[in-house]
Length: 251
Image (cartoon, rainbow, N blue to C red; front, side, top):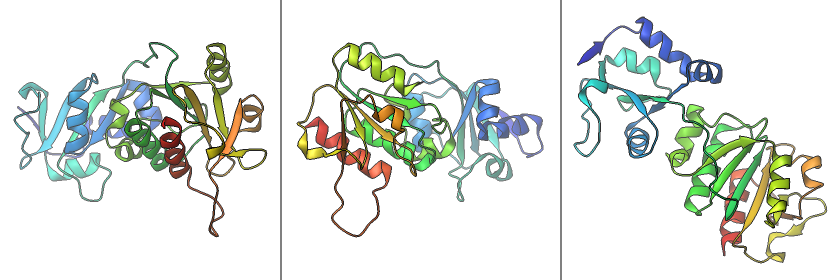
């Protein structure tokens, strides 16, 4: 079993670059941290290339991990690779998957327009997974789904459902061609979400934390909806609003 003790090791320096989007895309790899996320990755079609663990970390017997995939690292090396304040003693280097395709345009879809906070994106993916959404579409300008904070906030849900990137305007046209209603989210010119009935097929669009869904997108939706605010808050967090709408629309 291989062992790396020095944070200055060339391979460790190489893997540290996976903390950036540019570094991930350059070599087609991404890094995940913590036992739960590693376990979720091992159970998914994602290819785990290497497991890095400290000497005191134990691999559960239920995991399908081969000895030749494991590298023992020092605590100092683990701190270099981990991004949490208290590392759990395990990270995995995974191969970036080929973008998944939807088998058919049928079901419930969440489209995300320019959401930039990793925690919000990860939470929405986790919520979409819990609500049984068919797939998630990430519009241009949205934070990278393989950002470590997105992955942690998703709690492994990025491994559970199809997530594709694309132009939201083009996706709206595709949904309209197969008769799937497209609901935007907005404050102006919109109806309370309870004004529509739960749907077996729909596409819901949520937008940027500060600007909401782009005007050119709202111009071609079938209907725009909002979640009423009854207290003094100026607005709802986009992930919270998405959760309310996804569960309501499911019925």
